Length: 81
Image 1 (cartoon, rainbow, N blue to C red):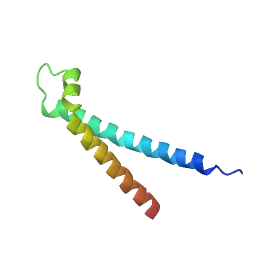
Image 2: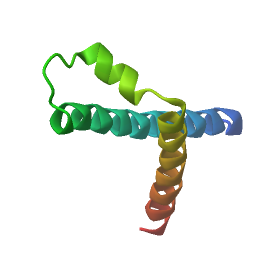
Image 3: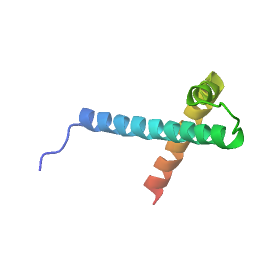
Image 4: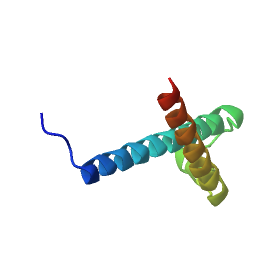
Protein backbone atom coordinates (compact mmCIF):
# COMPACT_ATOMS: atom_id res chain seq x y z
CA UNK A 1 0.00 0.00 0.00
CA UNK A 2 1.57 3.33 -1.02
CA UNK A 3 2.25 5.82 1.73
CA UNK A 4 1.02 9.39 1.61
CA UNK A 5 3.67 12.04 1.04
CA UNK A 6 4.56 14.32 3.94
CA UNK A 7 2.87 17.41 2.46
CA UNK A 8 -0.43 15.54 2.08
CA UNK A 9 -0.22 14.26 5.65
CA UNK A 10 0.45 17.78 6.93
CA UNK A 11 -2.51 19.13 5.00
CA UNK A 12 -4.85 16.50 6.41
CA UNK A 13 -3.65 17.30 9.94
CA UNK A 14 -4.33 20.97 9.31
CA UNK A 15 -7.82 20.23 7.96
CA UNK A 16 -8.60 18.02 10.97
CA UNK A 17 -7.46 20.77 13.34
CA UNK A 18 -9.54 23.35 11.49
CA UNK A 19 -12.65 21.14 11.56
CA UNK A 20 -12.25 20.45 15.28
CA UNK A 21 -11.76 24.15 16.13
CA UNK A 22 -14.79 25.15 14.02
CA UNK A 23 -16.87 22.45 15.71
CA UNK A 24 -15.92 23.73 19.17
CA UNK A 25 -16.82 27.29 18.10
CA UNK A 26 -20.16 25.97 16.80
CA UNK A 27 -20.86 24.31 20.16
CA UNK A 28 -19.95 27.53 21.97
CA UNK A 29 -22.34 29.66 19.91
CA UNK A 30 -25.15 27.10 20.02
CA UNK A 31 -24.83 27.05 23.81
CA UNK A 32 -24.97 30.86 23.90
CA UNK A 33 -28.02 30.87 21.64
CA UNK A 34 -29.86 28.36 23.81
CA UNK A 35 -28.99 30.44 26.86
CA UNK A 36 -30.40 33.56 25.23
CA UNK A 37 -33.80 31.94 24.88
CA UNK A 38 -33.92 30.22 28.28
CA UNK A 39 -32.60 33.02 30.51
CA UNK A 40 -34.31 36.00 28.92
CA UNK A 41 -37.52 34.46 27.69
CA UNK A 42 -39.19 37.79 27.04
CA UNK A 43 -42.15 38.38 24.79
CA UNK A 44 -41.22 39.44 21.30
CA UNK A 45 -37.69 38.02 21.49
CA UNK A 46 -36.81 37.01 17.95
CA UNK A 47 -34.04 34.85 16.54
CA UNK A 48 -32.53 37.90 14.83
CA UNK A 49 -32.39 39.76 18.16
CA UNK A 50 -30.74 36.77 19.87
CA UNK A 51 -28.18 36.35 17.08
CA UNK A 52 -27.37 40.04 17.21
CA UNK A 53 -26.93 39.74 20.96
CA UNK A 54 -24.49 36.80 20.91
CA UNK A 55 -22.32 37.59 17.86
CA UNK A 56 -19.98 40.15 19.38
CA UNK A 57 -16.24 40.64 19.16
CA UNK A 58 -15.69 39.55 22.75
CA UNK A 59 -17.71 36.37 22.30
CA UNK A 60 -15.81 35.58 19.11
CA UNK A 61 -12.44 35.99 20.83
CA UNK A 62 -13.60 33.80 23.72
CA UNK A 63 -14.86 31.16 21.28
CA UNK A 64 -11.60 31.07 19.29
CA UNK A 65 -9.42 31.00 22.41
CA UNK A 66 -11.54 28.26 23.98
CA UNK A 67 -11.53 26.25 20.76
CA UNK A 68 -7.75 26.42 20.46
CA UNK A 69 -7.26 25.41 24.10
CA UNK A 70 -9.77 22.58 23.64
CA UNK A 71 -7.99 21.38 20.52
CA UNK A 72 -4.59 21.34 22.24
CA UNK A 73 -5.98 19.48 25.27
CA UNK A 74 -7.75 16.86 23.14
CA UNK A 75 -4.65 16.33 20.97
CA UNK A 76 -2.56 15.87 24.10
CA UNK A 77 -5.04 13.36 25.50
CA UNK A 78 -5.23 11.54 22.16
CA UNK A 79 -1.48 11.07 22.10
CA UNK A 80 -1.27 10.08 25.77
CA UNK A 81 -4.02 7.47 25.68
